[in-house]
Length: 191
Image (cartoon, rainbow, N blue to C red; front, side):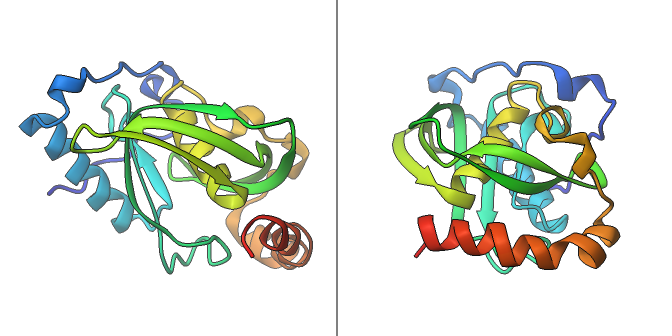
């Protein structure tokens, strides 16, 4: 496994729609190595997820994992999840406002509206079909990572008036976010 260099905002690869991976190639050595490298890179950077375009590979693969993440201590745990060719469908119009950051947009956070409930279809790293639903912060994490495969960054959907550095988030916004949005979302979708 290799820790790969993360593409930063402004790099053209982050704005391309990634190519789907043919199902018969999912178990290939090249795809499996990419998945392993994504996992290693995500963990090294304390990310909640990372998508292939973020490591300069324009293919539809993303990995997600939330444990005891110091960047997102309020997020519910998500076991290591590999998504290949994911498709997200909103289950209703209900949204919540999520304060997000991104490994490709260092030192910036902003509030993004995310669908509260989604259906996600994809393939796992073995080529098996996935068809599941997510809600709350987990749904938001899935949407954020899958947006990368469509050439989108969280800043495209965030309210620019909410942009803040990580330090200023901690200093001025975190407590309010934890006491309002986090409490509401956790009570409604994760309890």
